[in-house]
Image 1 (cartoon, rainbow, N blue to C red):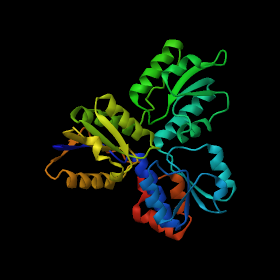
Image 2 (spheres, rainbow, N blue to C red):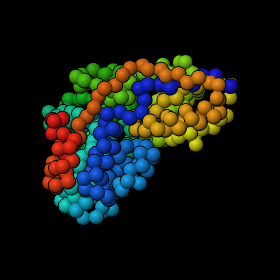
Image 3 (cartoon, one colour):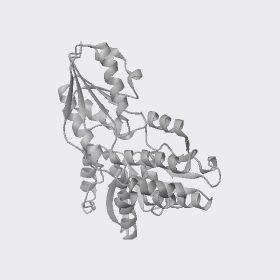
Image 4 (cartoon, rainbow, N blue to C red):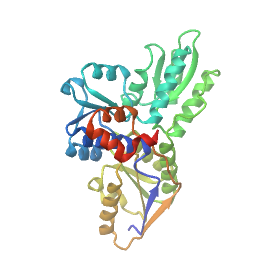
Length: 332
């Protein structure tokens, strides 16, 4: 029987996700629906559904976008050639790439230009590495997922090496892989600052602390969300039974058999109302269980809207009025 429910913080939306959703909502406000978005703006089914109801249309192929549309590229980063193709088709292009992902894009370009061969640690099939690789020439990089792949890397003769990584990975996972890279390639360069997203680091730290206090941890997030998957994994590493669910409808009460303390957290792309709904669900199941908040650290990072959105907004009377009303210019 659950006798206590603990809510972890930080949890939920990070600054990059907040900004990406704001981009879609502002574009809808200024240009009106429909607004097209290449790929899910963030990896959460509820966010996508909420924006669809407001007039956003999510596509995977540029051929699905009518000529001269407003087209937003998702927070995960995009191959720059796709953006140029979209502009050539007459679309109003807005890039909602998270600034922390953009940082890795810039690093990749710089190191490739300086003659480095890049070992990128990330998930195959995820849009984030695909966007990074679009920035640099073929043959200048390789992708690995785990430390046990390091022995299979083939490096062009005489090339300098540097490692970069997907922003949403687990720090322990990256550490093991980097350790293996340094063992095989002692001269491999490590960038001066970590590519791991601050929100990923903070949410994983909170999840680890939460898991140490709980028998069961529920992570709210979509299966496609890399950072949510890692929250589940790190909770298990700390000894808790952990499950990833989209919302309260995905909970199997049998998961809580024999448990006394339940922990709840959420991935960086999960809206806060899902936490509220989950808490309401468990209040009905366990009305006598107190709800405790566990605050590990406070986040105050905020990213401004992209320059290309502001520039496009200034081309219309309504957009100019919006910019002036919200004083977007003062953010720069």
